[in-house]
Image 1 (cartoon, rainbow, N blue to C red):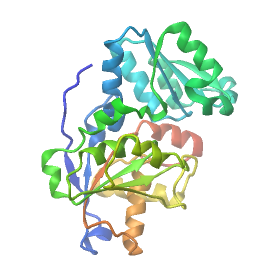
Image 2 (image 1 turned 30 degrees about the horizontal axis):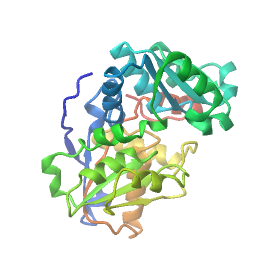
Image 3 (image 1 turned 120 degrees about the vertical axis):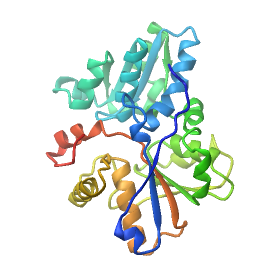
Image 4 (image 1 turned 135 degrees about the vertical axis):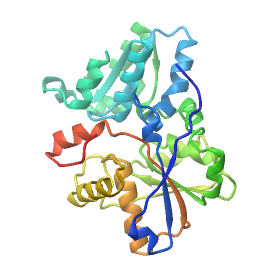
Length: 301
């Protein structure tokens, strides 16, 4: 795998909600850098694939939900590298249902999909099914969301030298790997703010296993957070932004993050600075699955 260190462009967001309050917001377009596995997905996986190829492992095993961006990216990169890959999917009941667009693409890229109960899924690599498969096939295990030390190393390459001009770096948080990489590579004056999208109390401790500094903070907006929520206001917001700027946001991470920032600035609850760089972490592959699940009208690529 090519382990070059590309630089994503920073795109100014000319939203009146920001400009009227004297807030400058740029979006780092990581989503445009890697067409196969956009944004932080490629960053998280590239050193994992490099480690696998330098080892005696015969393939990869990783985890995700039915609409997982991580599974999709891992499958695409494994196909590109011609590496066997197994995806452990949360929800045994899905095995007898038609595959959604995300899982169909995973399968098309050669990923072996194995559906397990939610109870066993929580055990991850310690589950009986996974343990047996890993041992039998000699597989390199990558955690859910790809977050491990190698993933954080990849995410430390997101920020460029000229990004030092921003006083706030913002990103959406699912497992914490991207935020950890940003916090580890941010300049001394910068605050890294994570918009937490899941109800997972283990995220702060997970981040602390990779980062010793206290230059980061997690925030949540309970009204809009969560993988399983479809909010009409969010759909409207994404469509309006796409028409105004041409920027396509994903429904799980970047759209809720930006929508939340707009709301916090309107409500005067944003206190982290006015010169902001948000990271577009990709994930637009999930739009088809989102529209499939919610019969929604999210703008598509």
